[in-house]
Image (cartoon, rainbow, N blue to C red; front, top):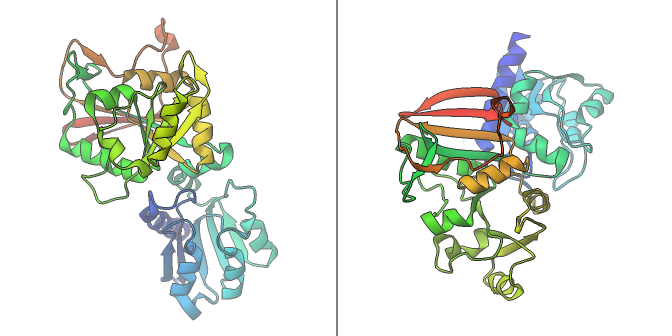
Length: 356
């Protein structure tokens, strides 16, 4: 049993190398083991390209005969953008297959298919770790909505800017680099109009080498400045607005190549539930909100946040802009408790990570 966990851990670490690149597919790593030696390995690099199992079997070649195959998520058994992996596994002569977790996609019956075809099969090895790795994919598959992370960088007394709006930089270079890595891992980064007006952000992962995510601006009346940084790359920009926005402005932005999403409105604001539903239809599986206090509180109140990442710098600002606006909480026992919180140090800052 110990060796199963060891090899599954290797498969999960291998899968992680596809982070930020496989959407809307899961991250998958695969290892082929024969007589205690790894004879083949592969990981899924991008949607539409070969799956991890195929790459690992290609790597193993003839050595795959009578081997054990480890994969962190159930192999596909249906025709999608690529042929089913189960067929190739059976043909290759693999004797045993060890799977981390079931695929939440109802079309996938890889475990049953392989069992039926006479392979020795086991599922649920390091299942907790396998599910954490693909938490984005699991939520997207089950709800067709993106997994939403709320990221906040604040002082120790809960401020994201001084009273004049100055916020550069509250957290350390290490924390900012970490956030740039997170940007590169998600499909899209989201801010409110106020953040664009106040900071004119680029929202790129420039401190790391990685893919540049889509940028979403929540702007209910389309007041985004024409010359802001985000306008420079229209293909990367999504503007979420309401039916209260002038039709002529929507048309102008669309002509520039910007994707404008018109949502239902809630008190004159973009209804975030509807926005998430529409983003899901665009195959956006993960969103990181880097908003101001208003967008942060709206997202929490509307229940669209799955996970919070709160970076706290050892600085005191006093009277300034709070990290999260009003949630209408009057009693401490009504405060929102983060589930499974983890804390760690990043540079001089403290990161608290938890689920909502």
